[in-house]
Image (cartoon, rainbow, N blue to C red; front, side, top):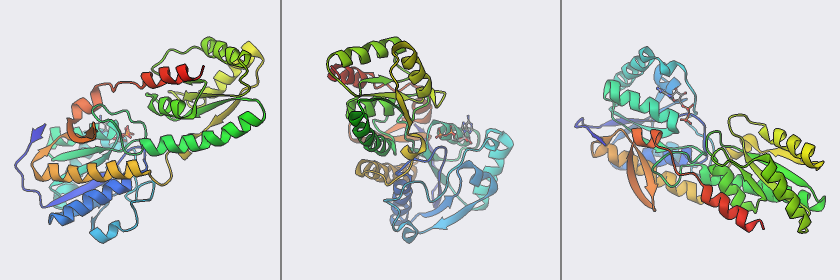
Length: 329
Ligand code: ADP
């Protein structure tokens, strides 16, 4: 963890990358902890775009009223290719200096943390991150803000799909989010009692899945739910359905849950971790510690250097998939 000696009087907070339920609860915790400690806070809009374009404004404790239960982010978020250029990062730092912002809290995923690392390494802007992403793919934290809500949203939808699957004796392939990691698929698969789970980390073949579905039918199962992580190519559930149809003649229905998994009111778990992490991020800055992500490990707040959080691979949820398979007997 990096240390710095600069006195912090005013901080900036921004949300960046993919939005995640609970980001607002985290912004609230940052702002209110800061105000309680006598520190001024400015909100930066649209992630790195707001840093480059100077979209910043003071925030007060009362501005945080009535947002803890809201999904999305009141600060807006963004993906900025401009920020990948050093001249735009320099411009961002000029804007921070102009507004007398001494340190930053970044709420986002691994891409956002890479941007944060650049600000510290190149310009020594003290910065602490909190993991705001539905993917739960950051190393060093048991949970990321938004993951629990995304899992519960998917689960709620799948419980409804199951009613139809059961009424029509149908096979459904439900595609959930997760480009590079299958944490959502693994958790959802176990929680919904899936027949099979396809994630990027596990080499489940269509042949194996078909074999299992046929076995299940022989055992008297009339309906099945298969969960597929979207992988690099959203819509792969259609490829799976086609492969299953070709091999078995079974008409598998496809449901792609898509962006509904990002929205909605955050669960209690997400509100609680967002509040704890946001408050801790502010206190770490005041203690002169930066260049790290705040994580939660075995229910304790921890500091994980950005480099480790973004570069080390988080343990996959393969155990969940194995258990799911065992219970799908
Ligand atoms: P997430 O934070 O959810 O992973 P992205 O991967 O889209 O989302 O990253 C968010 C933003 O972080 C990018 O649009 C870009 O502005 C910034 N960013 C990502 N990688 C870098 C990098 N290597 N250097 C500087 N900024 C980066």
